[in-house]
Length: 313
Image (cartoon, rainbow, N blue to C red):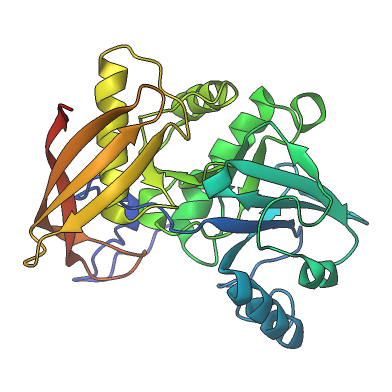
């Protein structure tokens, strides 16, 4: 069979995650409270656009989430084909408190009854194992299906749902599909990107001990972009010095961006030792960022670390 000749002048599609002009730190999804709800049926382009859960219910759910400043993630079982459920996994994450709670509900309507003002308000069981949510939201961007789904499939072999518990799930848009495979680590609210199977497995094994994982880490979503970069910089310095680093170990107590937005100064406290670290950042522009597949490359600003110095008391 003769294949059709390519159209003259037509350029091949460049996938947004196939280019990497910007660093990962400082790009995490910003949120502190998450409602993570199992929904094995199809997901529309935006899970809160009415096409997934219905327009009338979605409007009510959006208002409820907005009241508490909460973010919704839909999840699917890694072996979701032909999966029929009569109840739905539900996780509540309060990332600033490093707390995750779990229960099962019979319908989406029960989400409207949740008190999302803090942990312990809904009489749920507290979960101690981490949760890894890998974006496979193809209708949002093809990269998430192309790179996320094979990763989930392989991890399911290494962490079988029936044997190891529900550690790995497919999830809806996590922001930053240009970093696919893109994922969230709960209960701490960290985003990761450009991860392969081996790196993700290492990250999971570390997280089971609460150990801070550096590679692929985009930052903690409870922090501003500059604070994400600064915290990661301090964590990296301690790790290079072979000091143990845990999630929840750092507080960013000052975050000052210069009036010209070209530099920033932050103070990061290592609560494990009581030491303070002064971190200086510099802003620069990068070209060639493709925010979504099919979009034109554009210019953006990123933050680089200039220095990390332990403050002398």
